[in-house]
Image 1 (cartoon, rainbow, N blue to C red):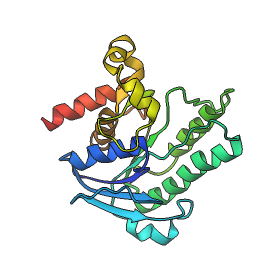
Image 2 (image 1 turned 120 degrees about the horizontal axis):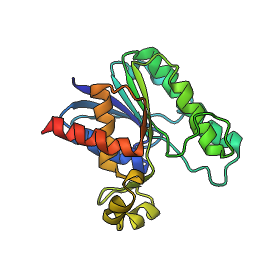
Image 3 (image 1 turned 30 degrees about the vertical axis):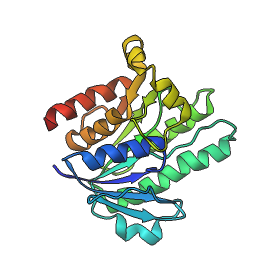
Image 4 (image 1 turned 90 degrees about the horizontal axis):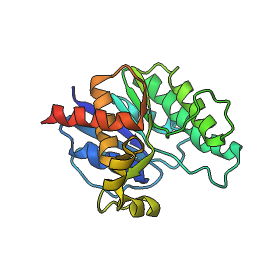
Length: 226
């Protein structure tokens, strides 16, 4: 199976890493990056679509047809945000894009970057976890071939990454130790990208991908490539 993927969030840390992995992977034949500004990457597989309003994709809908995977990596920290504003940039934005893609590409596998600790009940006391949980639950009801919620904890950036968070880069120095001490709570950006490609290819039954599952899927993908 050859993957034709749409990536949202390629100018952020996770999206940049997933894009890097996708462009280098033999199973991925085409990548469309959709964003408000350029990711400043050039590659034979890559087409970039700059669109200022991601809450309204109607003007570019015809250009989103013909893809069988979406790696949705947009996200912001909830620190300092009201629940209303966080809902708008997390739930509303994701669901608009997902609804458009589900209508245009019903055979698509949708991979959503959520987070460790997401609240599937939508009733907990932590605001961001409730909203992420609501987003996951609503995505699961859309008519995609499959929708997966990725819940990474600490993600190690790859060397030389342009958009890595400073704390992720700093903590990444200790990654070998963290991998030994708390392997269930750490992963690399390369593993996230490989795991997304793996679920797009293989369609595993478990639609919630916890941090510990990411490394397993990444190893399965690497074994398949080799």
